[in-house]
Image (cartoon, rainbow, N blue to C red; front, side, top):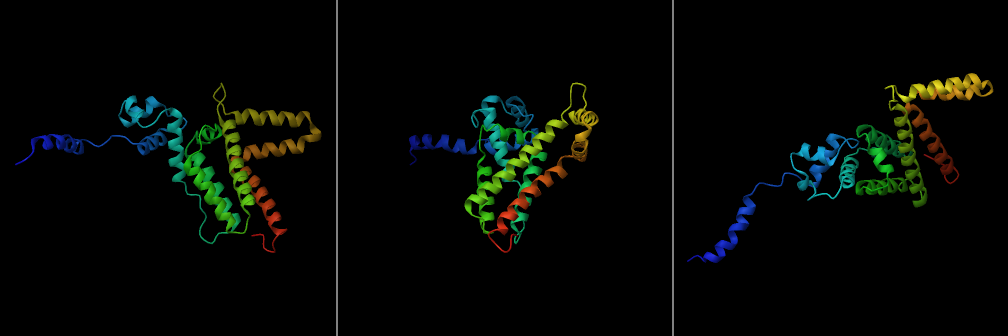
Length: 236
């Protein structure tokens, strides 16, 4: 004979299992934020994008900042930044910074979010630690590895943000880059003794962000190679 009281206790459990699965999760929130764009997503737009109301979102996240943190974590976790097996330390660092640059290009607003220092994505912390470990496999000390990775990642972000700021439109809808070039060219006319250096920077600006960033990166890599050569017969 069945105990009706035990049946009544089990019924809600069975009903809960048969219910519709949750419509959102923290991962879905992160993916939705990346789909909308880190630089444009709001709580309102994300809720609409996911087809839920605000209260459903707030059961998973506490704020807009946490949404950005989740999105950043997912973007970094999916980032392809590792060099191929057998790569030199120089190739390791080039692959890392190429990956960081691609990350910022793919997700506008992410570089600005990192500079806000409101959060530290766990995937970013893990990637930093792995990049340091990969350098240590090439004979770098812990301190040297940390300094090299941190310097190049910071430089990539700073360079990217600087060029991004120049590309923003002014009040007339024209990119600031054009007015900056005009200002530098005018300065070259007014300061003929410094015209070569000023015109040189005009050429840099006209050449675009990536070539100049790569020259900055290569300068740091050359410095690392010189440091390595003082301690080893094979700097690469």
